[in-house]
Image (cartoon, rainbow, N blue to C red; front, top):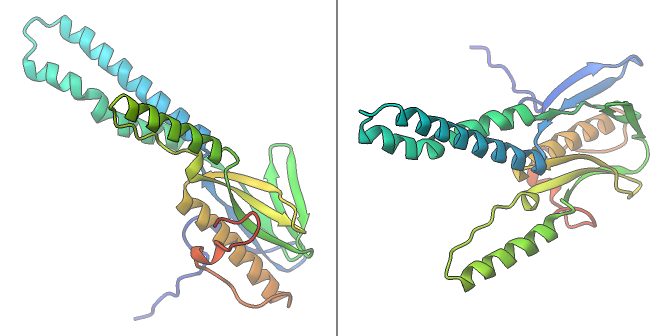
Length: 227
């Protein structure tokens, strides 16, 4: 039986290999990501929709004198039952797609007003940088936990920025943010894929050696990288 060899560029983020107008190999990487702000907005809208359904259900049951206790009980459970579905729905709507192209001499990112281009033959690398608001969020969460403990309550604030990263194109050691990504796993997959495409192009034109396809290989203790 003939076995198909899996491409190292299969899966997410979506990656296409093609021949550009110069006749050279090029890659188009198209990640779909959420930002921490969009994650928070999705949760807020999901909660709002759940509350609206509960209020509507309560109003409807008040019009049914013979409504059973089970219906009232189901109404109380409605927010817990519908929130995950609604949250997933809103998140799906809030994903944004960014097109990035790597050629032998350029790295390009498509913006709403055109392409932002970098010279790929100059010293560069892709890196993940913790979100700029991570420390501020951490301080606020720690304060909320201490205040809760003082009241005898258990408080577990959710992390949004602490689980988010800036994807940066380090251009001659200068930071150029390309994407803001919610989710460590998603961020690692994107930076790994871009690095793999970058190093593959370097191999083809004799600029480098080897391709790293492991997310863990990108977490190097250098300035601006994740520690």
